[in-house]
Length: 344
Length: 227
Image (cartoon, each protein chain N blue to C red):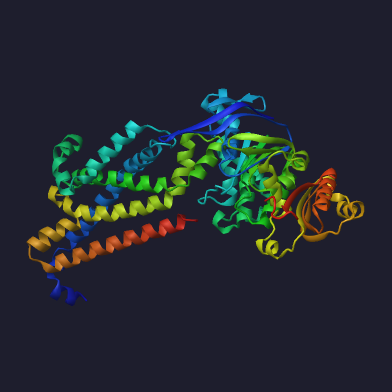
């Protein structure tokens, strides 16, 4: 549905130039929900704004549907944009217009006959659950309601693609979930391709089919959400996973109170978490295990967990424990070794 | 009541018809000048914004020339402007005296002012909203008509109100070109004619006019503002 071919974007200012995007190749399938995650400055916002050419690439091609946007003259580009809806972090509604008038704006812009507006607006407001707010002004709405208006507005001209630029980043967690549910529903009902960018792992986990992880203007990992997050290849991806699996850090206070003995941090991913690794460890290696702190969460169908354990014994016991855990597919860090001092 | 007026404000009673005429002259001058100032100033204000850097239609050279001309017009004292424009109004409307001549100088003085106020108002329009309209495929003209002006309207109305009040003040000075109005009445009959009661009443009427205009302007601006 959307193809980016060797796309780069260089921003020039008087201090020099910044490579916001660096040779991106990306293909987004029809009907999927595609997530792009990255920290601020990674270039994700620039990337999504390329997809309707709000930002023109310095080099490369942007193709949406059958149209090569980068080759269109201005008038035709405007026409093509009507089929690409966009939702914004700060909603960008017109406060001078009522909810219904805001939703009608894209219809006016596209030159849809006025008599058709009311029916279409009603339909859209029903879809996003705001039929009773048609005559309210945006200032009278909550953040979540404003974003619903934003979504209704983006859908007005029956787009094939919906671009979401941090659509939930200004919302509280509960509202975020309700907006994500709405996006998922729209995706299923209308068969719409959705591209969303976010810095929240939760958003990716909840609704995305595929994900791209971005860093320094490049895509560093790409694939099915389950696949990418069950076998993360980069530290950045690992950090995003820890957003939903909880903190991987042990409190300094706890660390100080811990007596002698081996202290291990075990990170479970996928299958390892669902097996009785620790009880097997006790049985097979014959060690005593004290669980200091731990957390296991599920992300889609994969389990993720971090477990801090303490194992009393000598260096030999420590070595065998670490070896056993590694064999089971657990990622082990030695925080404190019996030989004095920790690895970290 | 009548006795009171005849005793304490004899000139006001004597010249009442002239005062009424002066009220209408002032209202006529101010409203016509305001209309033309808005018709010229609003498009200029829009142009000042959209031709600036990183906006809809960047045209740095035009933008700077426009800004420069506006600044020049704004720095000329009104009373000087009136005199400078005498030959111009003679050419344009065939006479250099009377309310119409005054209107020419009033518009020349306040249209640039309106342009600056409109510029400020439109610059305040959230860039995100403009971007949203672009993402919908809006043309620049649609963005001006459907986004920039409606979103800036309360601020534009406030600006027009400020201009109207200023015009009431300036129209008093336009008496120099024989434009009439309350200001001229206060000056010629009240001040030069030593008729304090006329000076008092005409000033009072000007105060009421300013208050009225300000109240109406504020009410409209408030009604339009849904922020």
